[in-house]
Image (cartoon, rainbow, N blue to C red; front, side, top):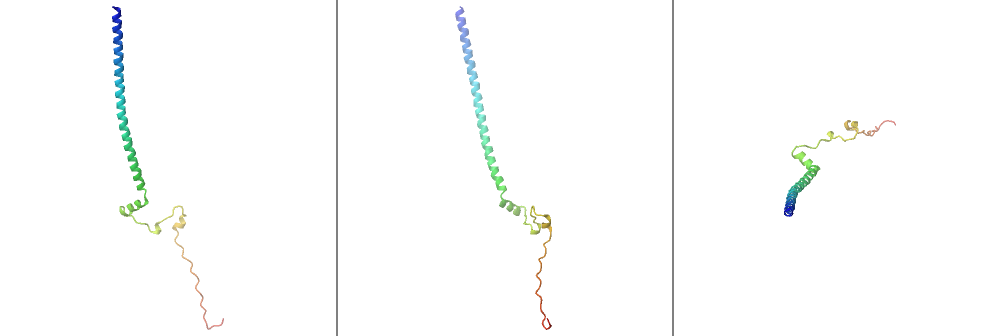
Length: 119
C-alpha cells in the first residue's frame, strides 16, 4: 500500500509543478505583450514629437528671416524706416554720432584787380 500512495503524491507534485510553470509562463507572456503595446505607443508618440520638433524648427527659421520680419513690421505693425538722424552706429563714439555736421570750408574768392590805379 505504501507504493501507490508514494506514486500518487509524486504524480500530484509533478502536475502541480507543471500547472504552476504554465501559469507563470502565461503571466510572463501577457506582461511581455502588454509591454510591447506600451512600447509601440511610446514609439508612435516619439515619432509624433520628432515631427512636431521638425515643424517648429522650420517655423523658427522662417521667423528669423529678415525679409519676413521686414514685411511684418511694415504691413502688420505699420513701421517705417527711420530717418538718417535717428540711426546710430553701435560701437561708434557718441560725440561722432551726436555732433552736428561741420560746415565745409569755403574756398577764398578770387581777388579782383581794380584797374586804373598804380600798382
